Image (cartoon, rainbow, N blue to C red; front, side, top):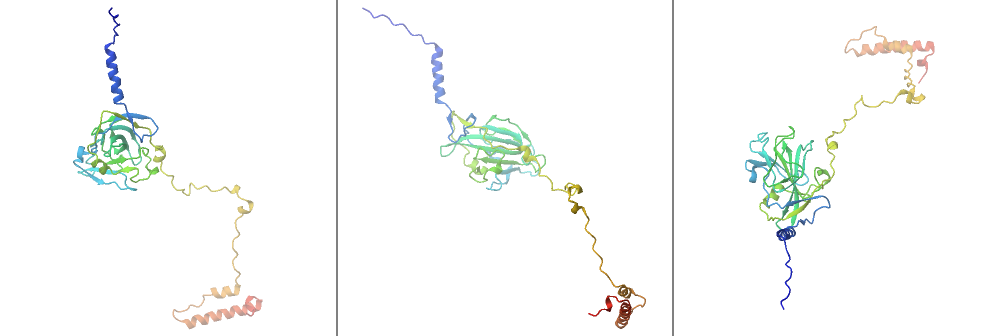
Length: 313
């Protein structure tokens, strides 16, 4: 006896395709970065290396006018070899693949600023994240949360509305919380990379098709309005508040009495003011004779009137 034929199970074509997509999704699922903060995140691909932000890829035609040193200048200033404002409007490029986490006119000493966040597999195999900052720009060519590639145009060289000669201020930061709040963080290698050293050691890096979670909205609060306000000027005599007289005590309202003039004997005053006889210059004897005569007359007059010169001392 032949066994009963089993019913054939129908499997539509899209079932196998969907299974394949699920497998691919599991294979390329995003791998979280260990150092990511508990905040919003965006999926990005790893950078495949880093180049200089001017004269790509090797800074051709530019020179480093001012370098990085800890607790001082926390970035590098790049200038065109023509000097002055000859490089005004020159293109500025992203040093590597990443996502824009700030694109804003910060004003004050910064001007237009762009910050790009980069995830990369470092030379030791660990996946890390850094921020690159591009300051004093004339124009910003990218928007917040826009994904960029290595060597992509992100802005143009500026001078912060004439505050400086045109140049690029360029920073590479380890700490993702700094943003524009540099004064709240140590200016040393715990928070910053030397940009040139960082780029030279990572020109080519290992990447993959996987995307990684990169945290965003991590910057410390920054009060741009407060930073732009100048400190109040010192008080001038016109702005100093003077208390009204009605607020003073009655004893304080009286003017102090004028000092009394010392009492002078009239006879002595007349003797000292007598200039009837001229004295020749250099004739000391004539001067003292006249003085003794005047004092004698004053003394005699005082005795007759009982004045103070009649008393013995």
